[in-house]
Image 1 (cartoon, rainbow, N blue to C red):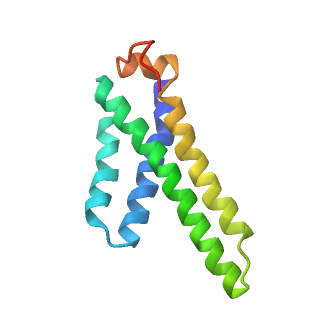
Image 2: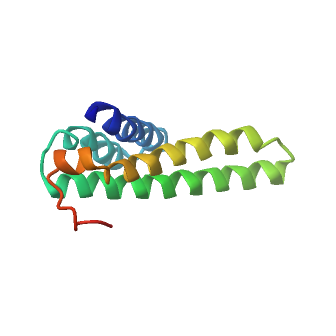
Image 3: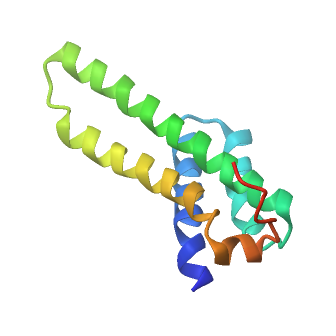
Length: 117
């Protein structure tokens, strides 16, 4: 079902928007939220924009996890639970990028079979 393929991308976009909102980066909040309507645009460029944003989001979450882990290590605080949680969030964002390559999602976004990353 197409909705199940695109759900990780929608959830990842919301998580990124919340992250940027916490940092007060309103432009990036709007960019992350704009990804959700793009999931309904049946054009190749929309699929690639969402896919690229999800890949970038995975990198952002990995950087955030690394930075917080370094701070917690320096303070002698526990970090493993945070690393597992943010690692999971990064994995969902990466999964969302990969799911755009499924046959059903490629058909939805009208991506050519040869149009692969």
